[in-house]
Image 1 (tube, rainbow, N blue to C red):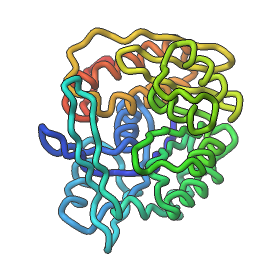
Image 2: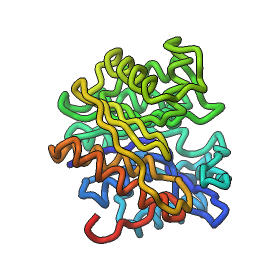
Image 3: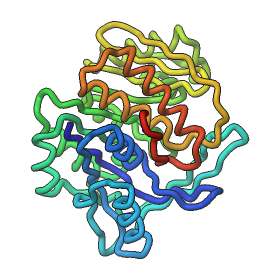
Image 4: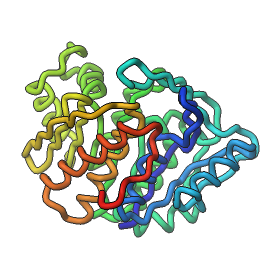
Length: 295
């Protein structure tokens, strides 16, 4: 199961300390733990933070040969504040190394044989990085999963970019808040605050049909999660846990679903396992905890 994850590799500056972060990095780590042959295409600065980040990724077992070093831009960092409920608020610094990700020859060779390619809307906030995503998607084989993580982060929200990315993907992951924002952005509904189960189903069906998706992954926090595939909706209730923070839980959920799809597992099995592992991540500090044996 060869998987290429494109996007930000950075440091999350959490109240508890510095942790490796970035949705593509979190996704890649969990997909690797679950048996994927994963590469991250990203960029760090020629600085201590960049060197430390690469070494830390290696210590996690992640392959780092596609993480390049930029001589002019610093390594990316994100300030993270947590609410009383453990929900993160991000301050994402601009003009950093991962804004300059390139479609290198090594990345093209890898993606031509990849079973899945993962990319996020945040990584497409600059024109060069967006072009890199488009180029690499164009090299994927027809059977590959093309996974878009619609990680909407203000102020880096552009309707035209989102429209383009939706046209590139065949698997879409988003949360209930992002679904509501997309619905307003594309004129499907005028009420961004309404998040009922009926509305979730209607909006998810609209997205799936309009963009020809194989699957839509919808996470709803304490309200559980929903998968939409082959005209069916699969619902899983959230687990009762003591939340430390929710950083990286959605990325872990997506990794389990992608590995499950590539493994040909039944949808119910995929959904149950994704819910279980995402819940475990919520009980840990940071986005990249090692999974216990047997998970």
